[in-house]
Length: 360
Picture 1 (cartoon, rainbow, N blue to C red):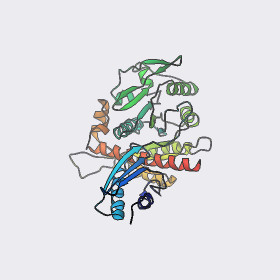
Picture 2: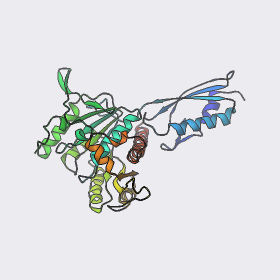
Picture 3: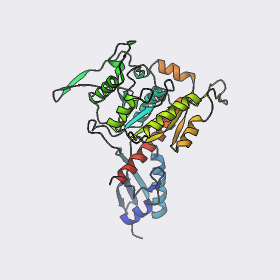
Picture 4: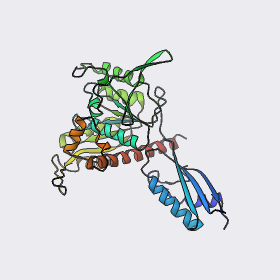
């Protein structure tokens, strides 16, 4: 049978994107194809929904399988990947495709640690990532990123001064901690804090970004409402520990984002400090704060459970030194953050894809 574009596309239509639940032809992932019958070679270009897509190896193996089954094992298959991150944008931040909030109703559950390591994981996968420390009362991102003494420079654009985010570990970072002396309190009332955050966000000269990770302050107050209503984030990641009191506060944060006047999609729930692990007893997991609380909260609200982050001594030491655990390849912490990052990008792509389909 003669090789044709229709025949190749028909074969490729048997590959289902596990996140979008559509075949890759219908979903528009096949950006181009070519073939040479004399050399028995077919070339396929696949456009992924994000450069951080964790499904590259899956697509590669499936494309080779279906095409060799259709054309014969003598045919060689060449696959090229491109990426066009899908997502929305806000008029004041047109260069940012996805604004993702990391939130909880309670402090001390690991929002900043997750935000930093999630940003680093996405950057390692090739995405363009920004990180905004929105906890203007107690900014901790500068410490976790090793930027305690950093001061952003100012650049004028169209007769307006802008702050330049500081670039480190592949991430563009902005924090109130860069502008306020270390140890100085910021005793602002709610509206003033919200206005300051809005100014910090819009007066920063962000480059083109696939993702802007926003490390939110604890609670369900003015700052959360401002971010949700004025900047239309693509979604919120709720972080909690398994402890009952933390779950109760996380549930409040989740409920707030689901309110009719806010309506921020829930990307999923991450459970931090799920268990204590030590290399001295590698077969043991010590459930200090309880077990599976985050998973049960996700099931209750029918939202994705994005993963567990263990409690390990190294994460504290690395954080104090300004070295994100995600940089330590092959360690339990790095692998845990990597798994969460994979789930986040898959869920964000799914939400953005179906949102674009509905809006067509």
